[in-house]
Length: 496
Image 1 (cartoon, rainbow, N blue to C red):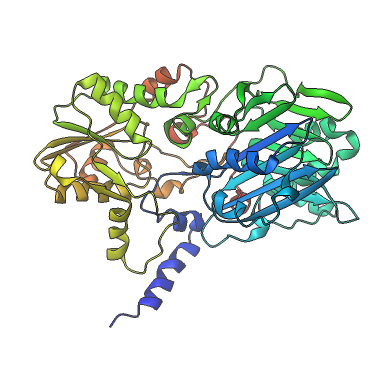
Image 2: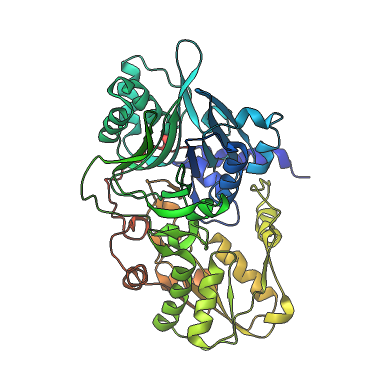
């Protein structure tokens, strides 16, 4: 009889010895897509409001950006109260026994995707700093990744700053805290001048609210208002919808928005003029909810157009079109509209499976995909099928999905990816494997077609992606290996 516990330990240990091992372990999830690090939400009102409920609604709308942990900070009567824990938004909020404690005039919150093996509470956000009287004086929530985190942490430690977490987000917190004698705006400006990489941040002091975005606008951050005295900032516009806020605009690259306790309203300050907006293209392809609007562009519309465009690029004769839930479905609908081939929602997604399974044998790992996706066999048996997915990362999920379809009796399988081949890791806030584990970085399209066992395979071209987005001013680093800022991976400080 096999020693399953020993086999399980050996399986886990193989990843600890490899670069980016922790990320590889996490991506044993059969949905081997890249993972967004987090979603952020912030609200400020000149009056007391139900920050407990509003922050809960806003974070729930951003749950897709992180499912491992959640946290909030609330400003109430000149004090900041903080709560964070492992679990989904509703899991964390239901543990709050006294909601009135978290009702004030400002709140920030965070949903987080963590790396397997490092789910310690000290890495959960929001992060906060205290004064000598043990009172919280500053709290922030961050989405993104700093490329010079190691260097900055060493500098701050040499100055006597003590760190309590292993996340680069704490570096932002400590830099703002260190420079508060310059005033809030001055402290944020000084911090932005030092940090490099991608960051969208919301935060508060005991009497002010603020939000700011990196000089390239790589990670999204939108601004809205519930009324003339209540403002909201969030990773996506769906969070504004959830709290009844009207979308105003996206916070600009290099912009700080902030409040002043002596003046009404929200102030704006551009740290640098004429910054180039390079928002991540993958937000439109995969991460953002389809009902979101980013930089004035509807995400669902982009995904539907991508399906239309890949039909123009690579037409094929088939009987039905299917999309891999969820982000592949709008593209499949677009492909169907353009081609006239009927779309059928025949891949059923189990929405009650949250975290990844860790199982000891390869045979069982290959079966996990059936728990998450299962086809309606009667709809596809004997048919020529076009399957549309948002991307191919490692190729393991795609290969297993093809096997499921073949076992269901599909006659032909034509695979279409509505993103270009992913050939490089992301250092700017998305958790992707190392280049060695990105299948398109190591195989030609023909080789990958044979590996997957499909009759044809096509990726959306870069030119077509740029045409759909209407601009070349996006971050396309994972497709081109060219980044808006120099790649400087700091695996120890990637907002785990």
